[in-house]
Length: 156
Image (cartoon, rainbow, N blue to C red; front, side, top):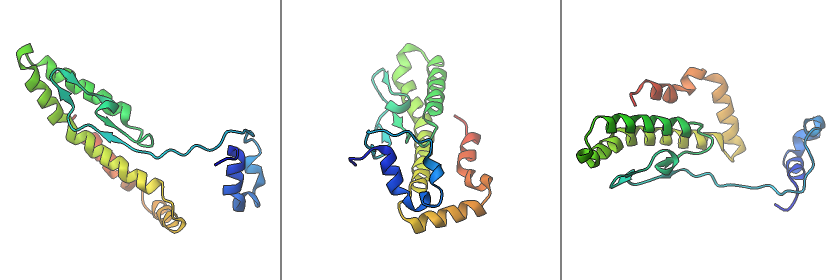
């Protein structure tokens, strides 16, 4: 954007800062410009080829706002260990097929949930943001977290 981050924030939130200038009192001045990053997640079509297996972000990269990428990777590693520990070397290709079948739906469902939450979090319209904020104040945390809580009840 050309200006430093503090100058950018001061300009963007001038309407708030004219009433509460102290909010940025401790914001350090700098000359680095604001960096905008288009957030994307990724999905691999297949999670294995031969004996090479993708886990974690290499199979399904989550939005950084999701906060579940590491736990999904650990779950997948646990399932891969389980599947491989139950098979002989001659059946590894079939075991990897079972691994993908067992994990892909769960991981992509949670990724879909992450996408939906991301769309709700990063709203550009002030009117839509006000509606979102109003609704989230009126609804219980349990209701808002319903799909995430459901995910914890599903087997890995």
